[in-house]
Image 1: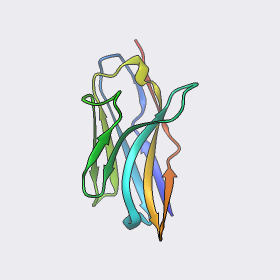
Image 2 (image 1 turned 90 degrees about the vertical axis):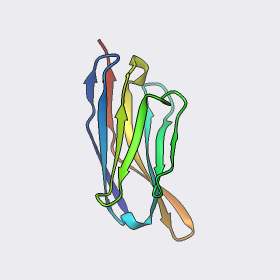
Image 3 (image 1 turned 30 degrees about the horizontal axis):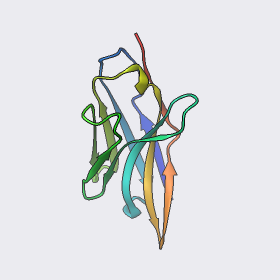
Length: 119
């Protein structure tokens, strides 16, 4: 199993920047990829960004060019740098791990951290 703990959320003005961190613990060697998802009030959870163990990245269209995902495999950490934040980026941000359990892929989730973009 894997445990995920996010940190770094808070209140930021439009146009500002904020960084999120996610620490993974447990059976981390079986993690194929880690990423960030977000859920705004009344909306479905959506992909923000994902990074594979090999370093390949993929971004949601709404954040492309503004957000950057990175990881430190030695520290079992994944980061999300968010720039030029907009009010519509307000959401609870969840860390996700894509875990290989034998032939089965299992998703693990953190508890989430709130990001509020407001003037």
